[in-house]
Length: 279
Ligand code: KIV
Image 1 (cartoon, rainbow, N blue to C red):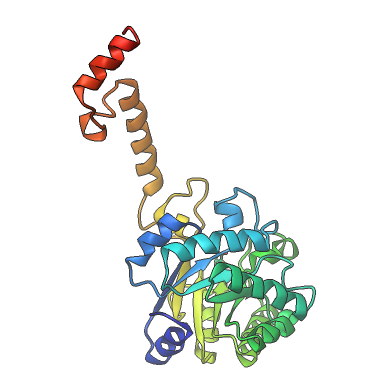
Image 2 (cartoon, rainbow, N blue to C red; image 1 turned 90 degrees about the vertical axis):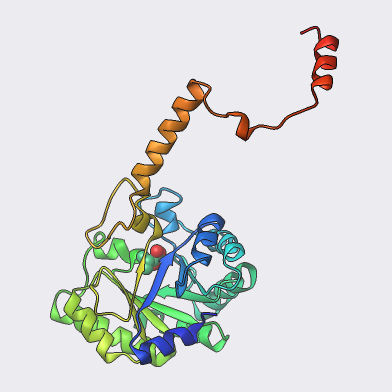
């Protein structure tokens, strides 16, 4: 069974950690048959599931709803759930109230929060309440208005230093792992070397202790955009479109459904019905 200790052990043994996002039961069932270390119910669901341009409108209730579905498909999996925008920024008490609800009502194993020193009191309060926390630094999508868009972070000395200092502050506060998103490869390598906890990268190259990918990107179901750092391990978008076109054509030609997809009834009953209804 995967737990926060999987992250500690793999960091020590220098074994890579793999993680993908998941938002629904059926996908969670598929993932339950694999050897993934963790699943992230990311607030990216606001974009890939709800169709918004950013993650800002996602609510605590949304995160609970999706995590509950994922938990049903992954009864023994290690599930990290994102705390959505403004659910941990107001006060540490508010963070514990919202984070506690997510853990109690959804079955998440841990929470992920975006930010560094500015949210450290909330991180500490959650950990004091015995809730494992994963940090998230670099391109933190909830701050995209402050960044002026979805841009690579940490490219100048001051910004790079700040991300390193934030990582060390989060580690000191007790997070079990940190996701870093879209920072230059060499900076990701330094953060990974400096940290005693597992650094999980997305858009940061292969020097981190593990990787996380949005599952729709990995499987190619998002046909609208493909960020530079994404590798499509399957082109299921194109395959799905082909399959639906085939379905439409088989419906039109009555080749679907055939006898293998139907249920039979005693012929005498049909004769009786036809007589009764004058067919
Ligand atoms: O919400 C999400 O999917 C994430 C990953 C991109 C790390 O935070």
